[in-house]
Length: 384
Image (cartoon, rainbow, N blue to C red):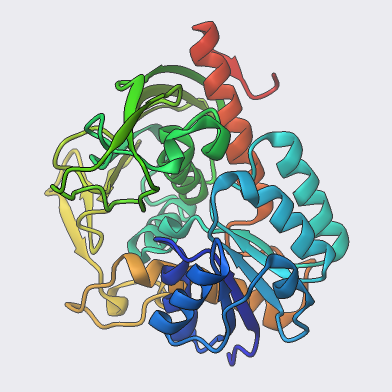
């Protein structure tokens, strides 16, 4: 399908250029980019070879060429920018979390519905080909009834008290950090591929560094490895570095999730194991082209990503033959493929295959449940 939309990217830090690359690989025309100020916008335009450096968000929305807006900005900006873009008649692809609280996300869901616009949240991990294949296997009953789902998402980029980024501040990123930043990726992934919902949570969280030493001058995500001495100031931190969460699922199954941004040596490692009555499945984002399948009464299997061995629906989001690995940048391309194919069809009553604002809303509700559970030291159900 030919994709003819024009997109503007808002955000020039770590993830904005990732959106630019994914869009380019799909052949989506990029009208320009907006950074935190005109200087950053111009630097990004030059380094990425884009046609325009926007000077303000209003300029983006006033640009009649722009069909869709990609939001890759700090969390605190998501709601107002997404709302304004929808009101301006633009489709929106927003980084997670969708907004700072569930009242805001509910408003965005309803606005996208009434405006008949495509509205997605960039839970890109769904689009590793083997995760799509797992979804198909489970939907066809290949592993039987699901008994348990266990896993983790761990990193080390905030291991030291001198590691700092805007995400550690509650007023910028929200009251939850590790859970919101990476835990929601895990929860979105396992619920989307199993078709189950999380109905209750019991959480125990920890702020390992209640005080961090902030450099005088902001730093980008994943770039805090300089050995050069810098002037620093102490900043109190309330967001969590680590957490364990027990889960109850809609079919009666149980689950558990560990999130950490202080686990040395783990750069970006999401893992899950799904235990069924007939077999089990396990996947690790650091080895994304390999899927393990376990059996009780016969040898276990390892599936290497190969479109020739996968279902037609999975092959649609797999572009390279077996032995030619697909990874992190490819997931953005495939997520955006689903988004823009939906726009191209123009049927907004049709069920989307990309993560929608509704999915983003549910993840924010789960975050609020997890925070309530941690503070009150009890199980919290979704009905609360």
